[in-house]
Length: 253
Image 1 (cartoon, rainbow, N blue to C red):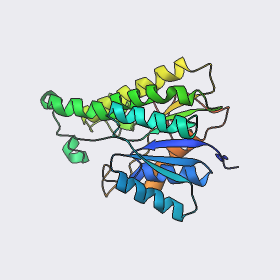
Image 2: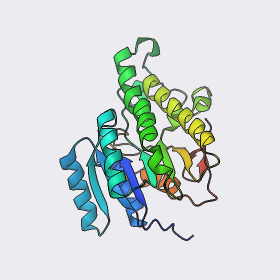
Image 3: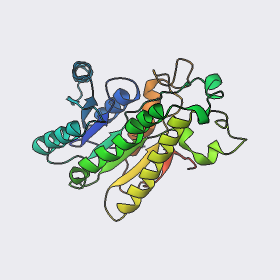
Image 4: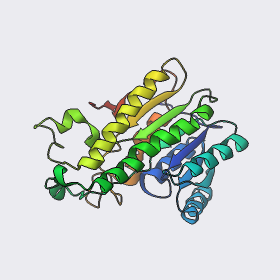
């Protein structure tokens, strides 16, 4: 299969200094894109960009706290003044504040989750993604083929959460799961709004990845966890929109 050619494309990835975000940036840069590494910690962002430069890849670091409206505005201004558009947005930044091991997640009590923890989770995993996308959408509309990738999780599948035969049925991290279900709803609604444009919007499940969030016993390494995001960010004109995917497999909402 011929690899997509992203030469000349501009891609912004949030949460891109490590883990899946950095590997997504690396994957897109290897296809020719100029990748903009969004992170709260600019020294770490600069270090990650330098690492990609050493590999012969085009990378820039930019500071962004995804929950900060002023940072959103600053990123918009930078992109508009420097490139005049945005071709790819990967909403990768996210948090899991609850007990996340499988054994602990089976003991989480939905009725006892602190509301601050719930709000903090939604602030990062949902509201920040919606707001940043809304801010940058005018620049994505200027692209010939805009791509928006929302990094979700299979734990956000209401179908699988409600199925006693599902392998994730017992993993009840309510705040995280609900925030990813909400993000999936955003994907569906935004894709519908943009269905008559060249912009494609999809949710991805990276898989169970050995990251700070996924833990050391996960199945995939970070590069493997980035594959679905890279695939959806580099879709051709005939690719899907408004879907939920892991690699080439469609997942139930």
